[in-house]
Length: 198
Image (cartoon, rainbow, N blue to C red; front, side, top):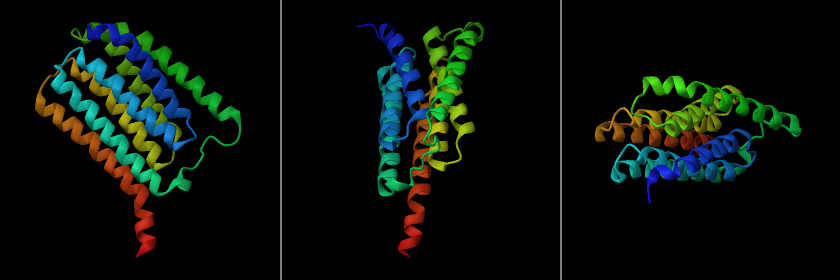
């Protein structure tokens, strides 16, 4: 089966998971969405890279999701609800997500003229993830949600950058950045517990 035929599914999955990360009130849903987001990243990167290189992104993303999930499981009640009890917070975030998606689809043809080897699906998904990650960073004050936003921005960047550079060293460095962000997020979540135990 041609991997490019899965590209529309991967773009839709990237949109859905980034919206879930933005509006989720449950940490389990957010961690699951992060893991699914890396499936979309894997499919879109595999259009440009060999399977062996692309699977590194999938494994690094799943490990990052597992590390963050383990950190959140240690302190379940610390996942504060920034959206509040009202539906208006969720609707506002969905409206902003729609604007980001509209912007990504509008700008994609211009970026395609610059990134000649990138497919339209890769550009759209990369711009959507980068935009949603930046939106996430702008709407949160929690460290763990900021880490989720940074991972989303990095995932979008990796999709577009994979069309330009196929170096294994760069791939390893980006995977190391993903993992270090996850370990930082888990540490920020668990550090207060360790201080109390001392």
